[in-house]
Amino acid sequence: MIVLHYTGMQSAAAALDRLADPVAKVSAHYVVAEDGVVVRMVDEANRAWHAGKSWWRGIVDVNSASVGIEIVNPGHEFGYRPFPAPQMDAVEALVRDIAGRWQVAPAMTVGHSDIAPARKDDPGELFDWPRLARAGLADRIPAARTDPNWTDAGFMTALGRYGYDVTEAQPAVVAFQRHFRPGDIGGAIDAECRAILFGLLRPDL
Image (cartoon, rainbow, N blue to C red; front, top):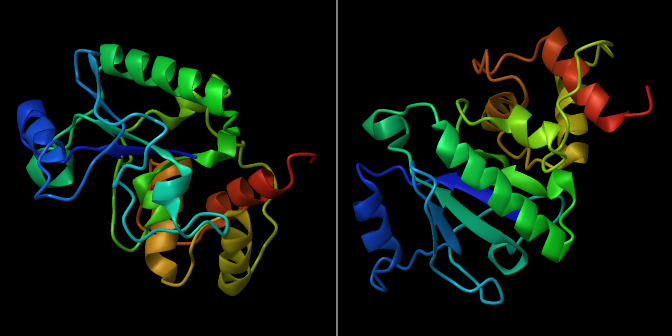
């Protein structure tokens, strides 16, 4: 897996200091600055402590199964903002490199909120998932063509089948929206959400 995060701190320097501090007990394999500079913090062959308590498609110990990338951005707490082009260029190149070497399927490149929806919001609704999807580096974002008219319970079953931890329904829906329908992350299960999820589960239609 590849897990994308934002640093959620007021500066890149503060994030690097924290990730290098053994007392903090957090780490990531890479940090990508807003100007596109990439800093390797942990060798990919080693485990980094970036995912915390998380779950994706049956994988419980995500730290042992993933490469973690921290993308410098102050996050929702300190003035969340769009990710600049040089940074996204670097993220795309880094993800392509990692995915090629480790044979990571597009659907296994996810955000922290995807794997821990009840705890995390990053990299958030401003992250350019469509760009990674167009490059074949993240799961495609289907056009909302066919509404399967699932009940809300049926939608949650389908969301769990796709890969999310749906133990807490509302956060799981919001996490799905942040990734696949960022224009409206209010948490309502509507026709557009149902159609997008249906398209993910049935790419043949």
